[in-house]
Image (tube, rainbow, N blue to C red):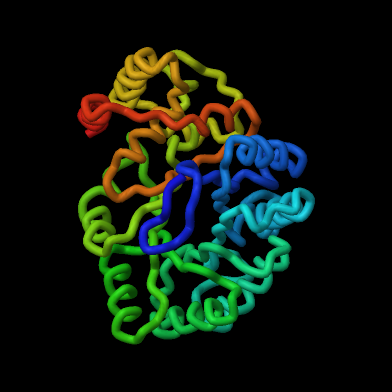
Amino acid sequence: MITIPETDLVVHPLCLGSNIFGSNADQAQSHAVLDAYASHGGNFIDTADAYNQWVEGHVGGESETIIGNWLKARDNRGSMVIATKVSLLNTRPGLSAKNIFAACEESLNRLQSDYIDLYYSHQDDAETPMEEVLGAYAQLIAQGKVRYIAASNFSPERLRQAIKISHDNNLPSYCAVQDLYNVVDRTAYEGTMAQTVADLGISNIPFYGIARGFLTGKYRPGVTEVDSKRAARAREYENDKNFAVLAAMDEISTAHNNAPLAAIALAWLRAQPTVSAPIASARTVEQVNEIIQIIDLSAAEVEKLSRFSA
């Protein structure tokens, strides 16, 4: 277990993503995945009110509802750390205080919980003063409805501005970011944002830790059929450079008793200085059993993957 910097949240080093709950995985499948994750000691679940509004016939909130039903059925809310988000749901857009209060109540109802452990601003809102945003979070924290807040998809400049306003006005401060980052998708995060996160003493809880499934190793030159509803998006990573990364991961896998490539990809992320717990999702129990494995890479192995993916 690890403690997320700037918090007292003690979590499993794999955060289970739930963006496919209610779409690629129905409630029964999602509950099986959650059971498998918990059976390995997993306790950190990431969701959002906007999941899965992009699916035909869905309105958002489906993932939260499935998780809430599971928490109630297992009576284990106290042992789980639940993260959810506000600002991207079509019916609850933005970060106005009014919207944050309403969205939080709706998320709590769907999650069947009295509190949210980690509440993200899912996307920056340039139209709402940051003092208003952070003031709303302050009220929710005072009411016991939220424990900590974090930011997703912010620019480094806006993140620094938010932290300064927090400090200057004695308001809650973002304790983490959630940004896209994995061994084959490094450009957006590394550099200015990674340095900002380091300077602020917080951490990244990165999403797409296994690159939409590409880093499981299922996608190879000449492979035309893959059992995944997200195959089209994963295939966006198919190029010679990324296939070379997979080949390097194959060699590392052999040295670690044929460890799953997904576990190696997540191990590379954990070795990065500003990362705390990477996020990965699973549709089946078998996939959970792969991503849950915690592997310690040597410095040479981390360097090797970094060199091939640079």
